[in-house]
Amino acid sequence: MRTYGDGCPAAHALDLVGERWSLLIVRELILGPKRFTDLRGGLHGASANVISQRLRELESHGVITKRRLPPPAASKVYELTEWGRELEGLIVRLLRWGARSAAMPLDAPIGTDALILALRGLFMPVAAQGFDAAFELWIGDRPFIAEIIDSQLLLAPGRPEHPHAVIRTDAETLKRLTLGGRSLDVSLHAGRITLQGDQAMAERFLGMFRLPEPAAASRIDGEVS
Image 1 (cartoon, helix red, strand yellow):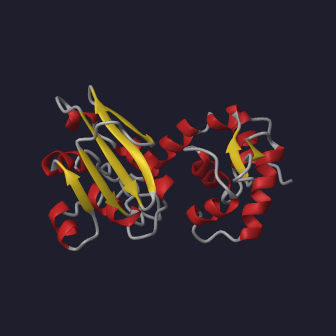
Image 2 (image 1 turned 120 degrees about the vertical axis):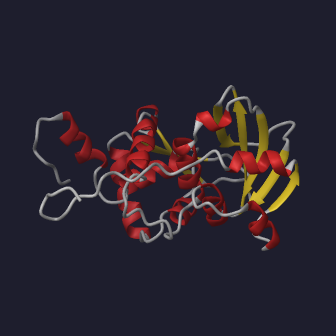
C-alpha cells in the first residue's frame, strides 16, 4: 500500500480512498449494494482487474463490505459500511465543486447512479417553491422516486404510490433534459423519452436542475483571466 506518510487526517483519508477509481466505486454504492458486473457498468474505462484491486483495498480499509444474497439470487454484492456511507456528503460536495469547472466534459458518458447523485446536488429549491409533486422516473430498467415537498427533493430508488407523471428515458437523455437545456418536446418527438401523466408538471420538474456558473478561470502563469 502506498502512503503519503503524513500525519494529517486528510492525507490519511487520501491513503484510504485517494487511489484512482476508489471514490467512484464509493459513488456507485451510495444508492445501494451492487454486483461486480453492475459496478463495471457504471465505471466507464476501468478494467476488471483494477476494479477488483480497488474493491479489495476498500474492503481491507473498512470502507466497503461484501455479502452473498440468499437463494434464488445467491450472488455476491458489495456495499458501503456505515463508516463508508459517511462519504456521501463528500461525493456530493465534490460533484458540486467539479460542476463549476469551465472544462467540465458535458459530452462524456455518465452512469445512472452518478446522474442521480448529480441531480441531488444540482437541484434548485428556489425553483420548486409552491410546487409539491411526485414522479415515477425510469432510467433504463431502474425505477426512482422523485418527490418534491416544501421545496425539498427526494430522489431515490423505488416507485411512488401516486405519481403525477411517469417518465421513462435513459441517463444521457435525462442529463441533457436537466443539465443541458434540451427541450422536452424535442426529446418526446425523437422518441428519446416517454411520458404518461401531466406534461406541464414534468417539464417544470425537469427544469429544477442547473449547472452552477463556472469558477473564474486562471491562466497558466497564474494571472486571473
